Length: 385
Image 1: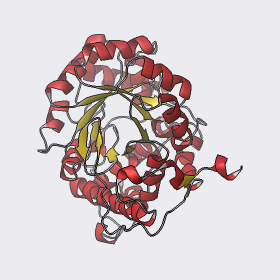
Image 2 (image 1 turned 90 degrees about the vertical axis):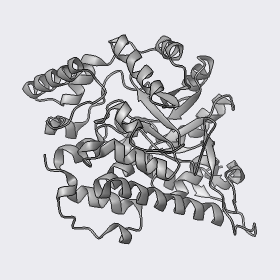
Image 3 (image 1 turned 90 degrees about the horizontal axis):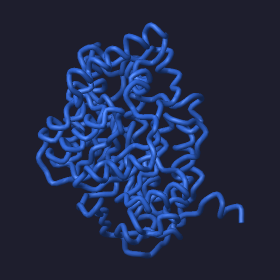
Image 4 (image 1 turned 120 degrees about the vertical axis):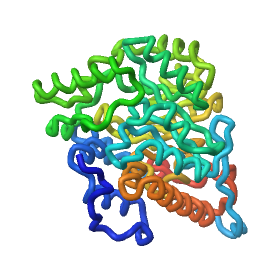
């Protein structure tokens, strides 16, 4: 498969990009169909995928004025680690389909901007190589699925710990893969020159076997792999088991209700990521920003709550923080920026949304993260009162 970087871009150079949408438009024009549809597709009719973004538009900002915003400080912390802003990088799989340097380029960008990156366990670069690709003190997290092979799961946790990852983000919304129509139509397969780098030769062989069977069945190779490897009996006892083997904090990723948030706190998790998997699992579930306040209220300050899904503008970040998120995580925008210009593309994209966020803070009368309060936003429910 030719790399995205080998194609001539019909879109202007990044110095002329003015929004995150420009990075996406560049990717739409340059990535090959197999990678593009895998990255951008959602479950079924993609209603949740699109609503993740639209939901932010339904929330209004209530700015305060005359506050002396000559100096705005966006620094904060995630799980006790200082970062330059609350804009972090979500786990996205198979990044070397977007750029030859893939996850290593993304990690270097995160370290340059001193922000948190969460690495997908379905990375096309190994845990160790990604960790060793960049110097810096910014926190790095490891995303994890629970496999039928418990020893394989244990080894992923141990490798992450040994490589300096400071938290495990346990994905809990994927006992099966959502029905992604584009992947089914394309019979999605990982390009032959790439591998699921975090797995043994036996594990890689299982990927190949699943993909071969999916080709015969006219199905998605990834869906077949998930069905063969991920444990569908996933339940709260597995969360306790992961916590028992991890020497670093464990967060759960994929919570959308107050009920599950309370159970997660009772289970002793160290944090919650409000996520609907980028709209890729169960279609018609709520947008993450629409359920954020419900989850934050249920947690009652006992653990930090983070959010991913639909964040595309600095104003989106401010709205999420006003509704109780400690930080937000970007997924697809990182892939689009990576496909544009590798590490420098991701840096450029992050600097752009960070500057948008800084401006949103200033124009809302906030000079530090702690100034962002619930009263800075009005939700649709409030508007109906």
